Image (cartoon, rainbow, N blue to C red; front, side, top):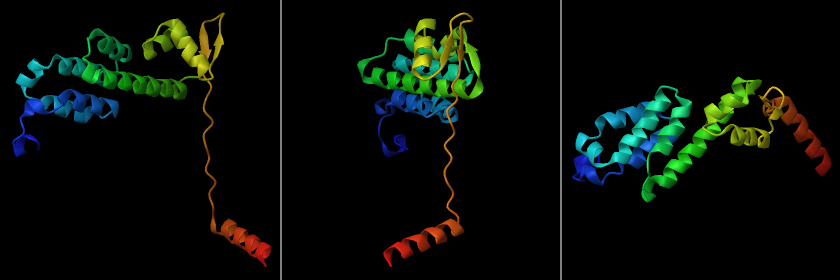
Length: 169
């Protein structure tokens, strides 16, 4: 749309655009954007290729590769904050996934999925309420209690109305 209005495509922040799709976990849109970016732009902006490598890792569910790809590139100041925010968001999403999928998991596996050292992964998990068995090097997942919203049916609403009416009169 921007190009149709006469704006040069070199001016479009493709790297931020592509990273935004990855941040939102919208891999289909990221793939479509990558396919539509002109080859000259891809060649002129190496950070675009580096972001796409992260996208490929996401697509292939290469959890550790996401972190490796992100750390392998020297990000410029205009995008480094975006990459950092993406990695933090991704780490939280993976931690939630581990929380819902496991009851116990090895420290090595958590470190692998979280892109951290075993010590950092252990600290992160313990800070988030998981417990550590030092002897087996296993973490026990603390499941989040599901929040149940009270449903207010008509009879409860009627009873509340009668109670309030009684108190006022």
